[in-house]
Every structure is written in C-alpha cells, then in structure tokens.
Length: 377
Image (cartoon, rainbow, N blue to C red):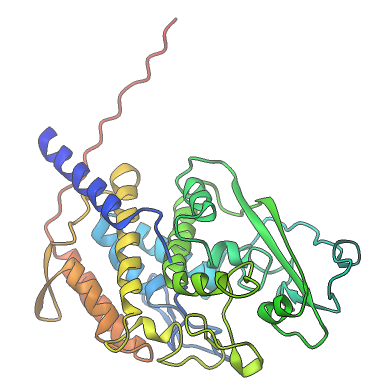
C-alpha cells in the first residue's frame, strides 16, 4: 500500500511539473445557459454575454474535478465558483449563487494624481462597475486585470495560488485605473493619447476564505484565463507604448486591430481571439488544451493533498465516451477541437457523457494517515 501511495504521489507531482502548476493563459461565454447542481437549466436571457457560461470554466471543470477524485458535491462547488468569477451571480432556487465583495478602496483622485495627463473621461473602471453591488472579481472593476489577465509565471498568479491553497491568509494584488480624452473609449486609446494610467498594489479584501474550495476555484479560473490570454498579453506588451495591463481590442469602436486580442463581447465570432480557441481550424486550440491540462494538474494535487476522496486518474486512463474508446487526455482534446466556438451545446453533451464514463470507473480511495502532534515539554 505504501508503494502504491508513493506511485500516485509521484504521478501527480510529475503531472504538475510537466504541465506547470503556475504556467498559465479567459475563455469567453458561449450561447449556453447555466445548469444548477440538480440539473435545472436556466436559458440565457438578455444581451450577450449576460446569463451565458463558458464550457471551459463551467462544464469541463466539473468533469476534471471528478476525474481528479473530488466528490460530486465538491466538483459542483468548484465549477460553480469558477464560473462565478466571470458571472458574479448565477441563478438558483431558493437563493442565487453570488460571489460578492468585501469592500473596495477609494479610487485615486485624478485631479491630484493625473497632473499633465488627459483625464477628461474615466476609462477604467467602467460605468458598469458599482462598488456596492459588483463582485470583487468583476470584469469591469479595478481588480479585473488581476483576476482575468494574470501573467504566465507572474507574481499575480503566484499570489492567487498561495491564497487559494491557504499558504497566505491574504491576497496581495493590484488595482487598475485609467482616464483619457473625452473621445477615448478604451484603455488602448487612453494609452495612445497620453491618458492617465494608475496601478496600485493592495491587499484585496475577499468574501471567501483563503484556502477554501471557493478560493481554489477562483484560482483555477485565473489559471485558465492566463492561458487563454497569454498571446494577447505578449502582443499588448509589444505595443508602443506598451499597454499596462490586459484588455481586449475592439476595432469596431476605434481600437487598433491586434489579432491576439481582438474580441467584441457583444458580437463574438468563431474567428476572434476566443472563438479560435475551439474547433479544428486554428492552432489557438493548443492553449485551451494546455489550460485544461494545467487545471487538471492543480485539481489532482489539491485532491490528493486535501479534499479528494479518490486517487486522481492519470491522463492516460482509458475511457469509453459516447461509444468511442479514448483516454482522459484524448477526451480533453475532443472537447476542445471537435466543435467550433458556436457549438457549446454539443460540448456540454460530450462532457455529460464524459462524466458518466468517469463515474463508471473503478476508483482507488485516498487513505490519509493523521499523526498526533507531539509537543516537547
């Protein structure tokens, strides 16, 4: 038994080292609504992306958590809180799931802080951010680039991981603020037109405890986003002047076209920066596959060391999904490449079959030994 335990520990460690536990790149919402723990489906309502989910942050996370050895209950918690980082609120009965916030700092005063810079219009946070009601992870708030555009191997992602694992009781991050000319609409336009750009290092007040599953799901979301946005982050850093934090470019409203960053959230396409992350046409799918593997490595390590009840399955595990024999890694590749961005219902159906295959597997229980703490007199 001791040798078997060591074998699994080495397997998980090797997976983490091969994929990179903090080597990272957002996956956009798709035309698919949220499905609750009990299977209740909430169809999308309102303008895109409201009421929509990402099949990577939501559905695939559920399957990967089950494969990693978490209970069904904990697997749902992980995928719901992963999606909440984007959605902020998800429907449920009798009470909706809400990420919430624990307060924000007073913003800088542009009259004082932006002398000599254009500051006629506030660019960031956007008008959709409300410090009283927005989630701390809001994509429109001051922490948006920290949670949604972290850097591959960067201190921002490391801070999130330390907090998610409970190695730090506090989350150290940064705020982002921008002002520009009255005609500027986006961060890039403000940067190009001598706008006022401010970042501040802060301790972020979080509404979920450090080390909790909810915190870990938050980190998994940022890990996936880091992979998804990696090419964009490199392209933004190469601009003159460099763009100070991650953002999408929307040429339709005056941004320069940056191939790796072009994405219009009100009109997503199969060939934009996030649409190219699915299907069989573009090599961008590779970063989606790598993101899923990295997320699985983290889930496996967490399961083995903390909440898991079964040993994580190796990526080479043979499965029969929808009548086809494959491996766990092969199922990840199929999920990413078999259907285009605008076919999320088929991806969800495939994940449902994958979950069935995973739950049919014979699993080895994790046996933990807790030794008493002996204090010397």
